[in-house]
Amino acid sequence: MSFVAAFLPVLVYIFVVFELDSFSFLSVKKLFLLVGCGMLAALFCYGLFWVLDFFVPVKVSDFLYPLLEELIKPLPLLILARKKKIVFFIDSVICGAAVGGGFAILENIFYLVLGEPLALGTVLFRSLEVSLIHMGCTALMSASFMFVVRLEERFKAKLPVKKADIAMAVLLSLAPPIIHACHNALHFNPVIQFAFVFAVMAGLLVWTYQYDGDMIHRWLDRGLDKQVSLLQAIKEGHLGDTKTGEFLMSVKETFPPEVFFDIICYVQLNIELSVAAKSRFMMREAGLDIPLDPEQKETYLAQYKEFMILEKQLDKVARMTIAPVVKFYPADRKALDDLLAECKAS
Image (cartoon, rainbow, N blue to C red; front, side, top):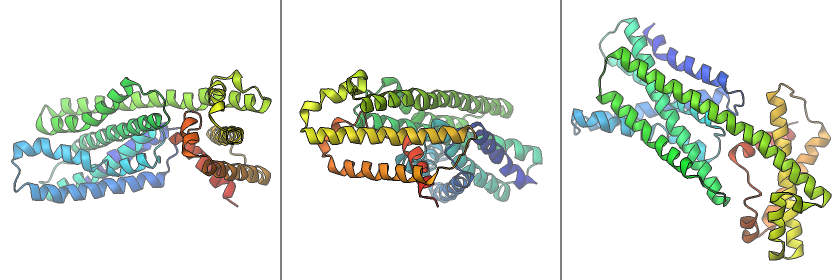
């Protein structure tokens, strides 16, 4: 029963946040793989700290070990963020919670096997607190990776970068080791300490969920409206009627006519594929999972093939010039990948 108590808080937390994420691109399989990654990180840290114990004083280890843990645990999340496999902020929180939860599970098992026997209530209480610390801190680190990747995308696309976003990325990166170190080194009344940890992690979840909801709204609604308007302007030959169209017309004289024609075709295909991918995403979330007919599948695959051919034909200068217009954020890329996978499925 004590071992069930070690697992229970992690399973409950993952279930709750997964149910909250109505726009999730994640799967249960991926979550449990991340839990496994967290357990491997805990095993590595256990071996590392066993060696360091021979050289590092206890007072120093209270601050050093949490820092090392918060650098080691998020490595799988950094890979996912770089490969744009984590799409929304709420996804980053769920992934971080899964990795931190796996770490907490193995740490709790170590305490049960190697430590002194404890009452069931004590085991459950300690398991819950440790799980919240590890899941919350790793979720913060994962969210910071999302900020960094997003800032990098905006920089590459020559879009303005807000100082507030940079400050938030730094804050989210520094907060986990500081919170974890304070938790290990500063010992308060267990009930007060648990209440503080629970309040911080609950606040993080609420803030991220609200921020994520606003971001999803901008991605689906505002972004989609702009894309549809630009697509209509291109098809009707009134490119200058939109701000994006004005930008494209401003660079028209920079390129030969045939190259500019390819640019317009490239932009149009980008918008058509993006609109189609977002529309399919919205239909699935609304519970309208209507299969695509064979003609639609062939059309989308042909458009994507032509899009890739044009991308290779355009030189680096042309691609850099229109980078603010033709951009696939992580959510766009994942939605497009899902659409293409659906089209290729028999």
